[in-house]
Image (cartoon, rainbow, N blue to C red; front, side):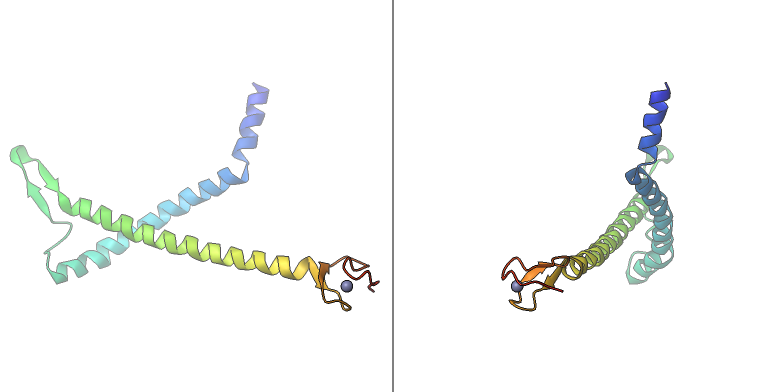
Length: 135
Ligand SMILES: [Zn+2]
């Protein structure tokens, strides 16, 4: 039982799980913003173009049941906007992280030998190409 608790602790404190929890919470909050955006900005705009109201687009059936196509359409629009926004965010983050990696590799691990101009490790005291001693 003690081992099980330790395993659970290790699992719960892993970076991935914490990242995922943060992602889920931010995702939920972000979803609310997108919903408000569609309901208050997108739907009125669509209403201006032609359809009276996206949320009011309901087809009545027998026995008081109805098909709420407006709600479905709103959910689809929400999903498309959210997918688009998340895609842009992931793209931006990938670009930023790749820039950081490139700079690190070029600047921190290599230098140029002053005698033969070869790329050599920054800590080298003797050039592996021309065997010159370096300061
Ligand atoms: Zn050299």
